[in-house]
Every structure is written in structure tokens, then in C-alpha cells.
Image (cartoon, rainbow, N blue to C red):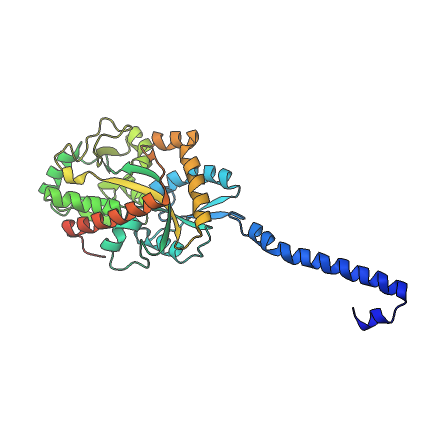
Length: 341
């Protein structure tokens, strides 16, 4: 009650007091409701999610990210924006995500190269794979594919090796960038076969493919899903795959294991991670929706038709895989004699 209320008549004072009491009750209710309202406002998601792709448009990750993003946004109820940030063998995109706010709105479609190989193969990266990321889920696995320009006089990997031995240092192969699984697979093949191949890095699988089609390079180490149409049309020739068994979409193409290189049983993996310290409820929501996405019939059919196996995992399973792969690829980098670039 204030001085103005005291100067009123008894009846007016009663009415004023009732108004003040009602106002106080309403204010208390509003204050009490603030935590709940704030909690509702902060529930994830409330806006668009940005999915950073570490390589150029048209590459393997970009191709699989687009159907995944289309279905994921239906489950999230908000747009999933695909954002290609090529460079540094995927390291530039990985560092961008590592430095982003840990709120779940900036994610990385990661892969073997930026998360497991680059820390060992590159002289410097601006992130720590284990410390700086929140694992969310695996989304796919696939072997690598070696292809050649059709003018190259080689029909299989044995022909390529024989040609390289006759022309040491002259047979070139393109990759999605230095330190990528494509680059390192070529280096491991050269080491295992005792040949000298010339590595030509590009800013993604798409630019490397353009160089191959234009005859600038003779070979490319790539992912199966980028090459289906080009192999079928005869614009490139499939030479070998790196998995333990033949690819379902390239059944007539032999594996490096079949050619006698058992140590070259290489399968790439793809995942979604975010910056470190994303709140657990947000990680769980993203994981659940990614699981639903990778189980969706349309997503599975698209990926399988491109030689990619759709999968999913818990955050913990992905985290354990990342740790194992860091150790494995560090040893591979050393074995192949790859010097950090």
C-alpha cells in the first residue's frame, strides 16, 4: 500500500487493496512460471540445423548427406542445411565445427579422413578428435574404389602395378585431398606393391573426378557412390575395391585383398558429430532421429544403390570407434612412410 491509497475513501481504499492483491498474485504466478517457460524455449530443436560437409559438392559425403538431411529434417521438424566447406582434407570443416557453439545446431558429417587420419597425416590440425567433438551416430560404411581413365592400358590392379613398375613416378592418382583415406590408400598400395605413384590432391572427390575425366590424371582413389554412372557409361574404368569382399554394385571388380594385399582391407566410415559438450538430451534427440533416418526405406534404398551400407550406432559406440581408428591410421601413416604435409 502506498501514500496515494491512504488518501482514498474507505470504499476506494478497499477496492485499491483488492486490485493490488490480485496484481501481486498474478506477478507471483508469472515469476513462478518463468523457469518452465524458459525450459520450453530452450528445448532442442527450435530452428534450422546446419550440417557441415568437409568436402566439395558432388563428392561421396555430399552425395549421401543430401538424402540423409532431407529425411532428418522431417524428424527434427526444422530444416537441415547442407553447407560444403572443402579444404585441408576435411580439416577446415572439422575445425569450424569444433569451434562452434555446443548447442546441436552445427554438426559435422565426418569421416575416416578428417577424424582419424588427418591428426597423423597432416603437420597440424586445429582440433583434437576425442576432446573437441561430441559423437552422435555412425550413418554409413563403404569400401574405396580405384578407377582409371579409359585410355590407360590397364583392366585390373595387376595391370596398373605392372604399368607403374615400367614407369616409376609417372603414373598419377587423384584424391579428395592430402591426408584423406583416398590419399593414404594410394600410398599404402604403393608401399605394399613396391611402386612409385604420383599423388595429386584436390579439394574433394568431385574436383578429382573432373580431373580424371579430363585426362589430367590417370587414376583416382574414390568412393563407390560417386562413380556408379561414370563406370556404367564407360567414362571411367573400375580397377579394384578395398573391402574384404566384392562390392554388390561392382560384382565384376576384384578387391585388393584378392590380388594378394590382405593389409589393404579398408572400409571407410561416416558419422555425425558436433562440438564437444553438447547437452546430453540434445545428443540423445539427434541420435534417435538419425537412427530413424538411417532406418527409413527411402534413405536405405538410395545409399545401397550407390554401394554404401547405411548403419547407426550409439554415441558411445561411435566414440570407441573413433579412438580405435586414430590408433590404426597413425600406424598406417607410419607404415606407408607418408610425411605430414
